[in-house]
Image: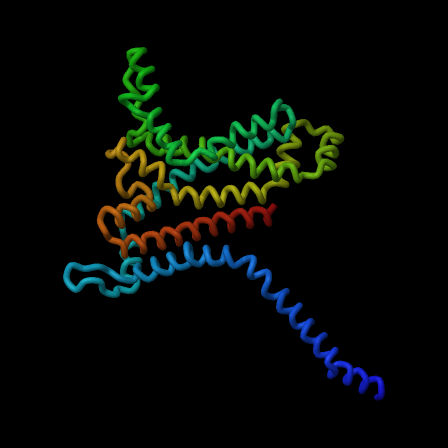
Length: 316
């Protein structure tokens, strides 16, 4: 009892109060200081992402009419988007685009990453830089360059065909425009995905490769049975990023539209359709609804892809 009374007296003394105050200050600093470091990011995140999204969501619930002005319509814009042939046509077009473009791009990225990891390439730094460099080129610049190459009247392919007495190829015709856009996107992002997959390959334990070599596995067998299964999470990650990027296709179609007005319409991609609604037709409310509807499509497609791949992994 005497010891406890002594301890209580010590805490009640001026020295004990100072210790409690110092402990509270330390706890306060541990709680507050991390958020002070995060504050610049949180402010930018709030100002440039959360608030614009909240504003877009708010105006998507209204409609600007000739009679009555801006009126609240609730989910009417979203119901209109679900049945809009222009929006649905753009979504289907991007699905077709992604079905053949994403596997080709990721296949090339995986092949290049495996070649880099195998060590058979000289000057690997130059090799990595050479394939990654197109990603560093702004998409606007890349599209302008490829638009010049695709030009039916002035492009080098047209000049070469004219020299041999052949008709100039129309890479931006209705039947070839998706493939031409896929070529631009593949050229831009193959190196980016290659770097991600190559970094994942660097984390594969060397013991597993040595064990495969001892068991008689050759180069392609080591890649197929050891390396690729171990980097499947990175491969799935790049696939999800690619799916999201496919539905967000805008710059390439928008820049090439004046060069191919008959093939690339204002609703060629969902993003281009939302842009045309807002800045050509001044339908800002419906454009915002189209944007959120597109976001929902991206979420659903990404979720379906992850669900299918996860079930396949569990089955294996």
